[in-house]
Image (cartoon, rainbow, N blue to C red; front, side):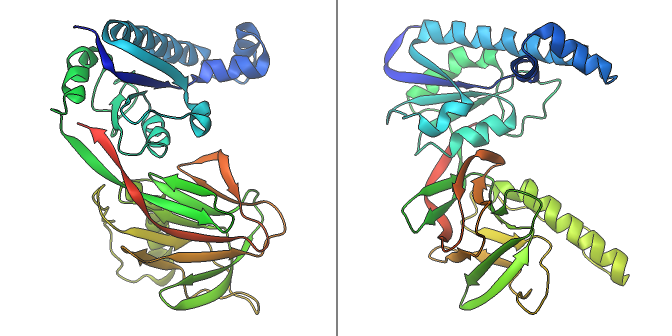
Amino acid sequence: MAANDDRKIVLVTRKTRLEDLIAKYQTQAQAKFYVEHLGADFGDYQREHDVYMAQRRHTVATLEQWGRYQIIERSFLPNFIFGPHDIVVALGQDGVVANTMKYLDGHPLIGVNPDAGRYDGVLLPFVSADLAALLGEVAANKRPFKTVTMARAILTDGQVLHAVNDLFIGARTHTSAFYEIEADGRKETQSSSGLIVSTGLGSTAWFKSIVTGSLAVARGYYHDDMPEAYATQPWDTHELRFAVREPFPSKASQTQLVFGRLAEGDQLRLRSRMPENGVIFSDGIEADRLDFNSGTEAQIALADRQGRLVV
């Protein structure tokens, strides 16, 4: 493969579970002692790590032949600036792809499965051996891609957070979230376990578990005929859905506005009544969050930009 200096490749990697354990317990020996003391199989951590590292080395070797490349661990994504012509490679799992995509603006993203025997890889259609031929096709714009709709949260102070799967708005702890919610001309005050705003891609994830659980509870409680199947949405659906988790009715809180859809031009407005611990985070990464405390208003809507997952 001839070197191509026109477009830089950015490889996004993740820490393995073994690396996280070593960071916590200082050495591999201490990490092994801790895991085995609890009766778990440390060998599984080691096998996962060895396979991932082997695939990482193979991927880097391919990028060295390509030309310009850069490696970034996914925890640094919030502060990383991508060049406008960068091609991005995410070395799985699926969550790495979603975590990466929300920081991109039209960049082609290649999902690479480091261990097909371990991960289903819904967002990981390729393995490292595919990269040598694949990168040239992507650089020449000869490779198709799937469009992925994203959600966006904007705070009154101008802070912005994008989501590929979903946004969570609520409290950091297990205490109830307290806030005002407004959508489609309706407005009420709520106390709940927070709410989820989901994209089409997210309809296969957290949002699916919320709806599936709600239907199961309703069937068991009322013994009525309820829909058995949950219908997911296409990834490029130009619509968001939101659902409130465990809304609590009281003199100070209502439970009518617990589900809805947001089409182009629609907004979901939320104002926090929580003095502390209020948060908004996306795609399950609470470390990269917006504070959502008393008086803060958030506007939730479809994002202006879309993800591009190479297929």
